[in-house]
Length: 159
Image (cartoon, rainbow, N blue to C red; front, side):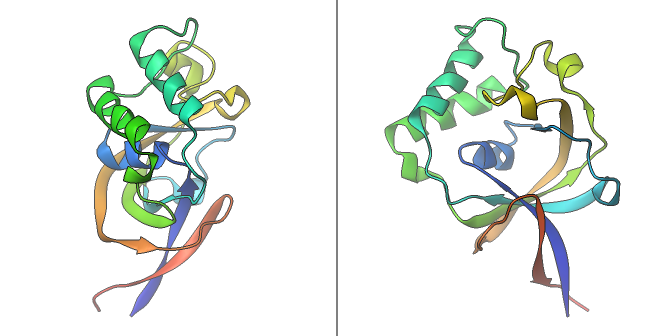
């Protein structure tokens, strides 16, 4: 028997930061969709190559070198992964569903981080913080083409 699971494509290294538990919030310009609140979704690592400049900015945020930017990343988990990605951007999976999470009701990103921007430089996309709970790795990862916004992927489930 199959059922569709909603998935969200996220660029690397952010998708791997979620899977690792280092990124407990996804930042978006809109509230968590009501139909997906408190529901398990798939996190899909997109095919877009890692950009070194973005990894360096994240590391600067975490070290406090970038003024006026808050982050909700867990530095003790994020920094080792980001340093590894700097050495070899291909160390993170691409074009695959890498974990599932339960997406909770959104919160104000500004109230959470104390600043504009969340955990990237696309501040306009960081109005709401979507808490990500109960992370479960997908083993083996599921190769898949992603899409913008939420999309459905059929998975086999025990009857």
